[in-house]
Length: 94
Image (cartoon, rainbow, N blue to C red):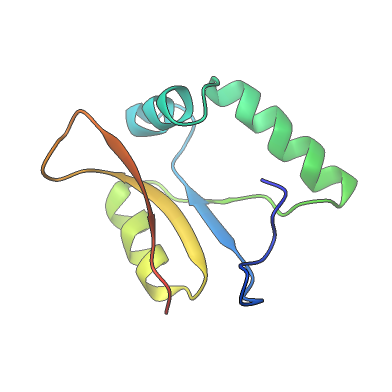
């Protein structure tokens, strides 16, 4: 959350789903080991202190995938198509 650029210097753009979305809840708990409200607090603290940039909120996983695909340096998360019980982080460099 504190890293604002990739090693190649490209700015990181973070896309997330709403905190009440089931996938966001699972991602927060399984991968980040925290509840969405805890993640929100961290993002707010970093954003308001000028140390970070807030993630861009999208409404559906499809919107998130399209945004990551069309934004150089973007990162987001989706459910695995092969194993729907696992949440994976995806990174697509453009």
